[in-house]
Length: 249
Ligand SMILES: Nc1ncnc2c1ncn2[C@@H]1O[C@H](COP(=O)(O)OP(=O)(O)OP(=O)(O)O)[C@@H](O)[C@H]1O
Ligand SMILES: [Mg+2]
Image 1 (cartoon, rainbow, N blue to C red):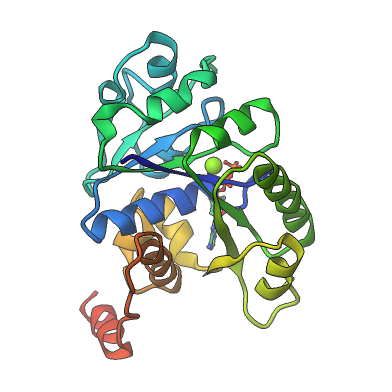
Image 2: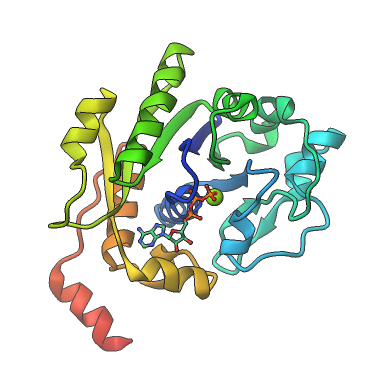
């Protein structure tokens, strides 16, 4: 069976790509066959977050030319497999995405799908192409208001919404709480990823945060969410292990 999990939000910049990269990395660390697909075919960012930018073929070509997905697959130095989108403004037949995500080459693979912001026709096509959906928001009103609309539409169209990830959460500051988000969206919050400077460092270093600093607060939460996605329990590492890792660095 091919699981394709779309990481969506109507609002831009809330952390969809960061979430896609780090959940993919965490799932890979747990021994799963993973591929991260950049369905943001106009403003691709997945490859760039990983420092990858030389792509003779991309998802755009796969969609336009009926190629096999594997022809546009690239492997990051960490071992993470990605299918990037074009870095240039190149049209793509997004209506073929569902077909591409169900390519038999991806059997037994979990496909994490990074998506563009918005709620336009193409966004809905991308959402429909995925077997499951995770919605990302920051704990601020404009972002939460946007995911309320997204989730409403997704549920009306009978899409499988796994839950909400609240990203960039800062404990003790004036923010909408995860409980309030759950209540407003009538959807469970499956993860609360804290604001973490490891994320910007990881983008600078072109390495998923989960690999760069496995014990950072965001890495631990991404691993916990990833374990939940595959029905496993993630034991938060003991504080001594975390300190030891820090001392070794
Ligand atoms: N948990 C976090 N802690 C700190 N910074 C974060 C966190 N999550 C995301 N960021 C910052 O937010 C920026 C935007 O994240 P990202 O590119 O993943 O958003 P996006 O939703 O994919 O944006 P777009 O809608 O433009 O595709 C990142 O470059 C990073 O600097
Ligand atoms: Mg993005």
